[in-house]
Image (cartoon, rainbow, N blue to C red; front, side, top):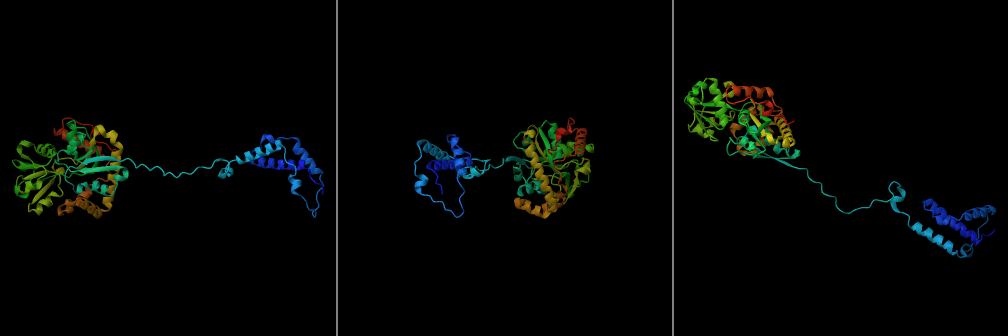
Length: 408
């Protein structure tokens, strides 16, 4: 068998390393010896093929007997250095990502909680069944789910809630549509944004022993009221409808003490809200009364309970008010479908509400709840505004867009 020369071994060894680097894409330019690959190929072609039974006999002396020259050693060193510098890891198998991503042990930044908007709402009276949508929305998380923190407050004076909103001391307040028209006519910057009760909650309540059968029978009697609208709007309007005026009666401000005033005989009749629960409360004390709904006394049908906001702040608060009204609508639908569960929620949140009078009034109040609290009946507001203007209770006709808005 012909033996290869040391020169051939070195060339073959260098060619093998070159092929290795070429497969890795890092063939160094220092290997460019044009005659070496050609000479090695010629030698390989000239060598006769080995028979299958022949064995190749080599020795350590034949393979590496002659040490490489300094130039060859430099080339080999350069090859090894370049090989060591090749990238390793997953990047070799991922051309689109030549460097594997580094891992970090640092914890992720905490997720910031959504912003919460606080709305302060002043009730028109102590908590009662008419506030069902507010209480249910609060308890079922319908406000918080929309990023709202609604704070309900009971007024010290039933005449101040809407005025607090006008003075920017509260975001929202409850009042009746009659009071809204009167305060807007006075220049107060309030505007209706929702309706809780779409039918009147007011009535003229007279004692059976007072011998009052009609509005004309009020002459020279003591008529109590709890809010200025009771005297300045309701009482004045029904008297004028019969050709009378406030000088024909003795009007008394009884504030929150309606039951005490009737029980102790301070007044002969009362005009204002709570028309659905007050008769039962007085009956439990042995006082027989008769209720005359205001719509039977000439007052146009109107919204019994509305939510008002400050007109000057409406644009800035529009998103929060829209979310608030949306929560009220969802709560009202739930109340209609679950009246017993709603009653349980209300009386648990406000134990003083759990009375025979409120329980008796609950079905009637529930039927008056607005299923679309944001929607506004422009015709209804226009008719009441015209009526109040004709009765000279308001000085000017106010555009409907100034009285209320649908925030949706």
